[in-house]
Amino acid sequence: MPHIFNDVTLLITNYNRSLSLENLLKTFQQLDCHFSAIIVTDDGSQPHHLDRIKKFQQQIPFQLLTSPRNMGAGHNMNKGQRAVKTPYTLFVEDDFVASAQFPAVLGESIEQLKKRPDLDIVRFYAYFRYPYLKPYLANFSEMVFSPFAPNYRKVHYYSDHPHLRRSSFLDKFGAFDETPPPDQTEYRMCISFLQNKGKGLFYNDYTGLFQHNNSVEGSTIQRTGWQKSSGSVVKFVRAGYRQVKHNYDIHFMNVRNRSLLQRIKRRKKLEETVDSGNKR
Image (tube, rainbow, N blue to C red; front, top):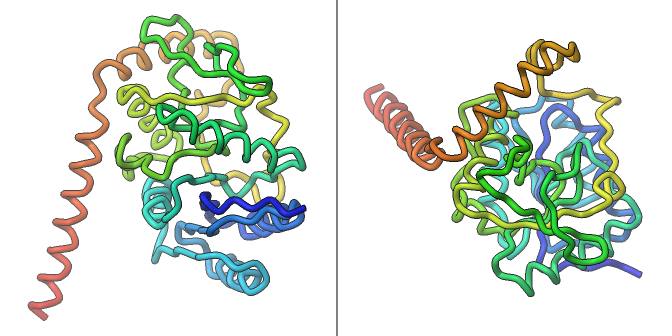
């Protein structure tokens, strides 16, 4: 029996992982999932990846948004989200694969967003359980945020991992920051989400709906040594640093003004390019 989601656009970000993207799209096809639209937003992948994407686009129709060069995760996310026309967006990065249970859970999640206008997001996958949860439904918990809660992981209320969100997301929380590395882009949206009082649900079996597989084409994010170190001293210092920084940023980081400055700079750069062309 087909699973038809007329109110949902599947939005996939991609960068140099055409095999992973094809695998994800084929999985949804095998699950008989049908969306109002599928948008693949590509961040300047190498030509051989784009050629492969365009080839299987003939078998699985989707809208492909490209960039002339690598513009960063924030730009790629903004570009894709602004092209969505449906009320809800299912966001999945290219190196995930959905399980057979996912279509039923997606349908239930859509119903919850319809019933509760105060909910902004339903999270389907995570590396760790959100530290502050209260029971909601059989398979879901509601995430609870308190600025005074001691666990610094409270900041990760939002995540770029697979989730369902309202397509008005950028209107409420601002554009994704387009200047920093991908992990900082996500972090700044976490801060904006909390500052703007976002609310969401968390799927209890948070590793059961999607498989994260970047073993074939690897991760496109490079982290510094101190972020990856497992030494006990480094872990202790890192935890203390994050406790202070995260709490400070939640209260004082001005994320939306930064996004406004970005738009002004891009507009100025575009105007300078046009002026330069006219002078020639």
